[in-house]
Image (cartoon, rainbow, N blue to C red; front, side):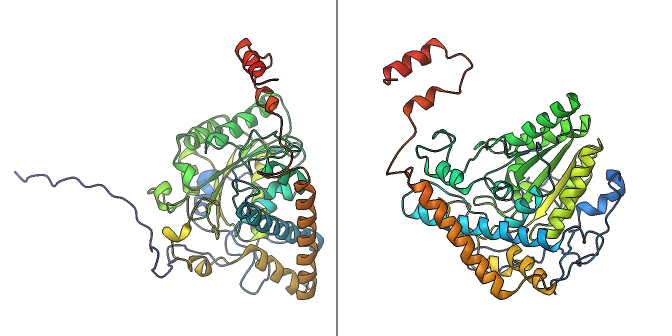
Amino acid sequence: MVEPAHLSLHVPEPAVRPGGEPDFSNVKIAKAGAVPRPPVEAAAEDIRDLAYSIIRVLNRDGEAVGPWAGLLTDDELRTGLRHMMTLRAFDSRMLMAQRQGKTSFYMQHLGEEAVSCAFRKALKKGDMNFPTYRQAGLLIADHYPMVEMMNQIFSNEADPLRGRQLPIMYSSKDHGFFTISGNLATQYVQAVGWAMASAIKNDSRIAAAWIGDGSTAESDFHSALVFASTYRAPVVLNVVNNQWAISTFQGIARGGSGTFAARGLGFGIPALRVDGNDYLAVYAVACWAAERARRNLGPTLVEYVTYRVGAHSTSDDPSAYRPKTESEAWPLGDPVLRLKKHLIVRGAWSEERHVQAEAEITDEVITAQRQAEEHGTLHAGGKPSVRDIFEGVYAEMPPHLRRQRQQAGY
């Protein structure tokens, strides 16, 4: 009798570590325009290949090609470019503000601007996003005031959330932006539940769930897929695969599924992968998935293949777990530069206009920051009242909280 071999545990490892040469050979990129655009009513089993390929519209020459192209006018593209540039400028100023001690915490979107900015344009008034902390582009593209965003970041006297949320965890019902949860993945099941409620009420509004690659390892992600598929909830299930969680590469959360999109197939959910740095492709896929939801065809799982250029947050040092030059080797490029190039190719933009737009946007962001700082920052100026701690928790405040509020002098 042969003695059984000792068991061993497999721990996935990234292709390269700090000090090594960046390697994205595992990212199989389809030629722009090569992935077909199926009918909106297509069944999951008929479009399995879309869970393993990458839908792209912009080619290397800046041209829009293939069946997913042609949905946006020059004016809409220019607006989209401006939204991404605004988010990038906003990030830059707020990162600087954090380094200056004006806020305790910040998270950038650098390299991921196309995902949220383009997706928002596919939604309608009343639709609800259940975002993570890296979808501020949903607000920027819906013209939510930057001053309000900064007031929340500074936790000052004009903070719309009255200092009760971590900086960058915005909330705006009017702009379809559900309150961000710091406990990652909880928003996924909430989005499905909201979508189910909309259907139960015979409403017309759909929901969009957002999650990062790392958080798909949470049980809430799988619970959401069970309910979404079972009840055909009118929801778009978004997975932003930016290659890294705070210090862990995406292979840990993905496991052996091959792609994050492929996980939807096991639940009978149509699944697509899209170039997350291609504004046109993101918009086209978002429109496709949103139409499915509105036509009572059920959920769609969309994986956005992108790259987090900056740190996970201001408390993270990415040089400790990935090569410093990795972002330069990322094969899908920069979303802002790619859309800029496309507009120039179309004759709808120029280098001069781009420089002018950068200056205009920077001025707008600085002006908004000055207005916000008039209400205070982390260590200076006005603060929300301590009384606000006790408000908005219960419909009727229980006795023990009334006593605590009195003890606090309120």
